[in-house]
Length: 182
Image (cartoon, rainbow, N blue to C red):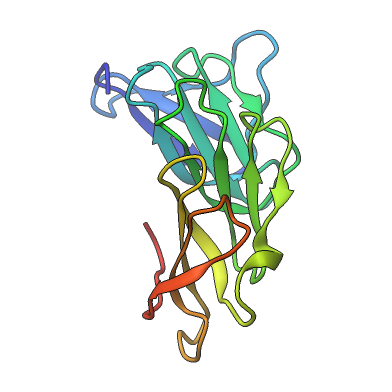
């Protein structure tokens, strides 16, 4: 949001950035102490208040969630979550402590962090029985979250959007059609 920067995730090759409209590309995450991203990038989420901060989620090969606070020079793997379709952050909290990581093609699993991604808790078992793949997570605030679910066939119950107002302890279905993609 603060510059003309295109970012592309390349499977097993990390994140790459271009500042000239795609004419040339440089590998991100080359700073001292940076984690190497080898997953397949599924989403990038920018912090609207801190222009050099963004999160990456990805599937296969390695860690599922990474964060940078220096525009991609160094990347930090967040905890032990893997195979994630989405990452969402509580932007109402200036400390950015509550995060949700949606899972790739997994029913009954949704990961929540209340310490900025250092540790994660699987709150998926609290979802209603038969819920589809818990892939598209959205944090509204520290207690209110939405989750979009789908299955391969996109038929049957447990598909749609689920809402919690107690940090994931209980969920209510608020939309009953499959939600796939952002």
